[in-house]
Length: 217
Image (tube, rainbow, N blue to C red; front, top):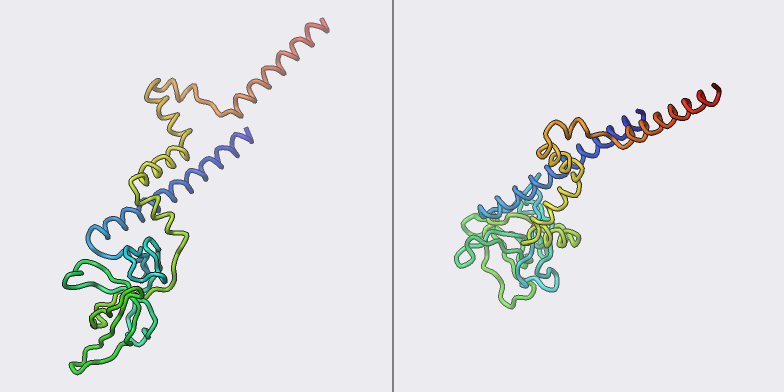
């Protein structure tokens, strides 16, 4: 019985951890996809994870690279050489551009704070933009997340995700199938492996005792 209790406790803890991870991952995927569909940038606590979709920043940033960026609230935080993401306009309306700052923020004649960027691989600089259009500043690249993006946001991602859930909860799924197929008999007949072993050992001991009694008689 002691082994059975330990096994059950371990099983409960495993299920809680697995369900927590699955819920968190599901929430992250749904939040990311819904934000992307609505045309926004997924952010949490002022930080965003972005993926490079063009080669305008090569060789600094390659297509498919994932970067971590943070929101910028003060123009004085930016300087030449920083990489920022800003909202596109005109022909690029609805897109987000991640380029290098080539002209630090300054105040124009109308009192608007402006700056200018350029793609490392581009020959022509971008138009000057107001600081209010800047979304965030790049902190670093996240190489390990590129593989995650490739897996979970590809056509095979959903199938892999479902496969992981099935693998983690295989024993529970088998029990559910048994219950649906056999009804209450399945739950009555279900027993932990440790209990089965204990029953066999108990029965063997009884048989041995009975044999000893017969020999004495």
